Length: 110
Image (tube, rainbow, N blue to C red; front, side, top):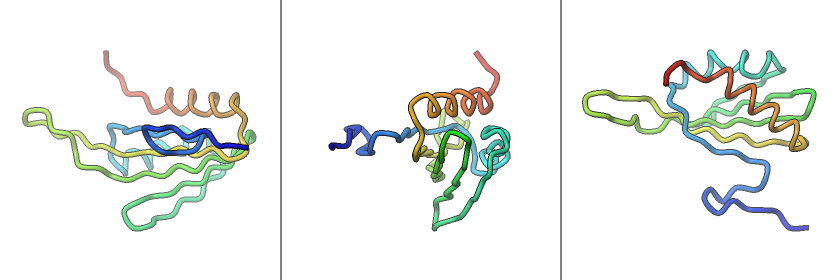
């Protein structure tokens, strides 16, 4: 059985990678609500935070790492590199988790 690899990120199937425009502290404030108050275990490993979330549909391990802020003229925007790794979750449970997570963490704007 072969694993699908995303050539852009070299991650196995069941992983999503994105950069979010938020600080580590903002992400930590959002996490309980964005995961529907699911059981959560967080730990710090060097510059990375690792969050293990147990949901009825399976487990999600979210790894975050602060990146160099983006600069637009005089404005600086925080960037957090976020990896979602789904364990024992079918495609429907993954989509449901991400849909709610994205809705919860979406900021106002155009």
